[in-house]
Image 1 (cartoon, helix red, strand yellow):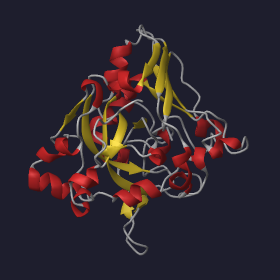
Image 2 (cartoon, one colour):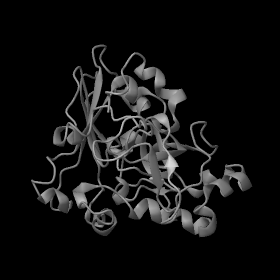
Image 3 (cartoon, one colour):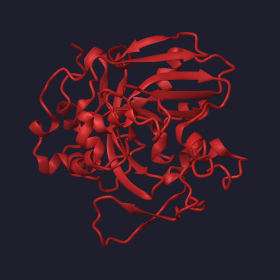
Image 4 (cartoon, helix red, strand yellow):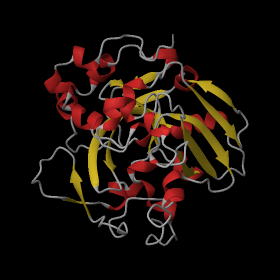
Length: 312
């Protein structure tokens, strides 16, 4: 049996729930030093960085219930509660990811292979959905660029394509061929994929990644709308052409390849200027959306010279 986190003790068992639902208090009270202890023994030489990442926000976190019960994961249904309701049917052990295309080291890599030697750290990121709601999530993961460097991209590779698992017997949303075309596909330019903000997440709140959040491994690209952060990845392919992506194929007039968070460019059916923070209350004031979801200083240079009014 594949082991990811060697000890079965959950994060909530070593830290009072009132604390592990507010990581800012934990970090302040313990200087971050207890975080490593909260995840006992990562498998295969993976290391976990206890200190807070320079890329993390200090905004108030959404609680574990918000993050794990309000999701878009159409493989399990179109309702926000469907992933939490049905994702338990998904088997995530064993798991492997094919890395192929324009790389010197193609192959099928087990979850253990991927984690081997990985420098895991907590990244507290804002998540902005294209539907104009948002969260703040304490992911645990590692930079995608580190994995791509191990695969050694060929000099002519320019894009990275991703695919989600297809298993309709366990992912009931895939039983409908009218919902989306399966597998779910996403893609990034290679320089976007290599940006240090781009991570592969394997956990949140000190726990293994829940199925409804994309277990066992998912992409997180915090300056793009959430649908770009593909879940339950089984293939990563490097190419020299822009790969097709699911929502762009489904509705090209509404969802672009880049899909950077941009409050100045509205979705055809709603404004993107403001957002609703999940869990803030029914009558809470909407927040102003930030350019690139607040990560402009780290990523604006990637799009220098591009007309940002057209890269929706």
